[in-house]
Image 1 (cartoon, protein in one colour):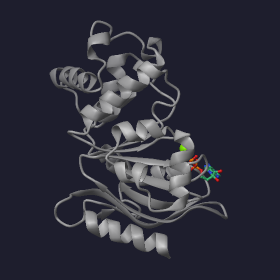
Image 2: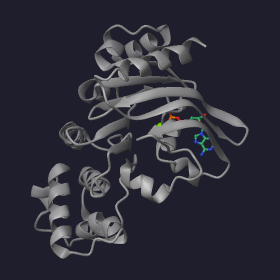
Image 3: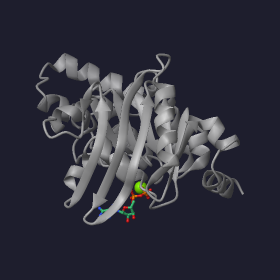
Image 4: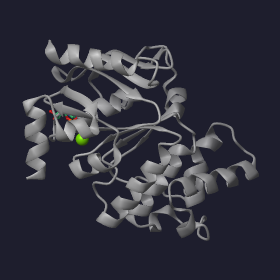
Length: 269
Ligand SMILES: Nc1ncnc2c1ncn2[C@@H]1O[C@H](COP(=O)(O)OP(=O)(O)O)[C@@H](O)[C@H]1O
Ligand SMILES: [Mg+2]
């Protein structure tokens, strides 16, 4: 199939020694019951870059993203086949410790979902469960992650207040801080700014641009301007396939496939 060959070729182009691959999928299929939602997607994600997944609603972006750290395991009746390669391991194999793997491949959801706990406890919750007990280390983690998420100045005097008292944009940045507290390699974000106002969106975008120095970021967005502003690479999803994958500027200026062009130009009017 044409689509499949092209993705494979791109995977090889990226894997030429110049570009370090952080994560890749090979012929990934995802079904809900008898209905296949992802039809064999092969993509490779470059380390310390931002890759945007774009496409119409229902094209499979969230399904694909969720499979990358096995969040689909939680949805009854879901079947995922194909390889998800991370540091020489197949994330999709049975003998992966999913709990451990998610320390390396973290996720931020569309709706900010802080725990009903203090700001401090939101960030330290998972690290404590993983055994970190030293107060100095936890304090430092809170400060560092809040700084990286662009929230420190606003909340440094309220660390023991409830996270639920924060605005939506602040909650989302707290969720980003919480995700990076585990120091993942890879951060998956599913439309993290879609429920935020334009100013909070801009702050979250700035945060992501800062974070790519340390993290590989894969972000689903239906906002084309956002993809253009922050991503290095863009994959265009259409009816459960990744039809086109390239540098973002090429996708936006010289797409090779008609469906991509229609989607991209439709949104720019
Ligand atoms: N939990 C689910 N159960 C059954 N079908 C689902 C589920 N989640 C998504 N789908 C279906 O999978 C397809 C892709 O959906 P999704 O991944 O949410 O697309 P997108 O994120 O691009 O909007 C759609 O046809 C959707 O109806
Ligand atoms: Mg979605």
